[in-house]
Length: 336
Image (tube, rainbow, N blue to C red):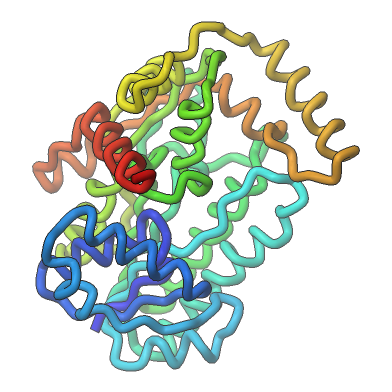
């Protein structure tokens, strides 16, 4: 038996799809029952065999904060795909995010040790990697460094990785993947869906930043390949293409039939923008739409290399244009 945490999320749902298409029976953890319906729609979007594949999933309600619930969910499980995470750049959610991502991962790894799990794959993030000091391409050798520009999300994923490496030293074979910005079918208001939603509403501005992007289908395929391989106690960056935010938003706009962004916003404006937004949102009692972390990320130039994974598994990542078009088809289908 295989267990997938975060089964209703962007990555977790696609791992479930990939595993069930390979004929495996899977146990999946969820927290909100209504989100299982989103997984069912996702399966129907991809395949006419959705009902049969969904029948191979055993859903279990559990929370990463509940050690005993995790222990129960792990009964009879050989492998664990740990894709559950809280993603937020809202400063007010920092403590909660650290609790879910770091302490929750510690609970899961302890339960895996107790239950004799044979292998764990942790879906981390490029946010837990370091920065290339010379401005070059970031690979698996660039280690995380603490500095004033690190987000709480980055710190929480780094801490979670430390729990996974700790468990590896205690006897569990592990692999860690660090996907770049993951593009794929998801709720408009979650994960990278918010980027598509912004363009759909009309996004006139763009920033000077550059980052990596990867198709969620590649992430799902990659983690399954790693779990079926002899690779243990290693990390792999998963990245399809490095692209400027301007080019990315232009491609999204074209796929959605919207006007591409046309007005460049410089670093000074982004620094001013998040401060003004924070003030107005504080007065209105709302969560900020733009934070210090998101503003600075939007101006950062970071390029990532997935050469290690591509060479080791002879793998070709999906072109970003295809990933965007696939996601756009999903959003259009959801609107009908």
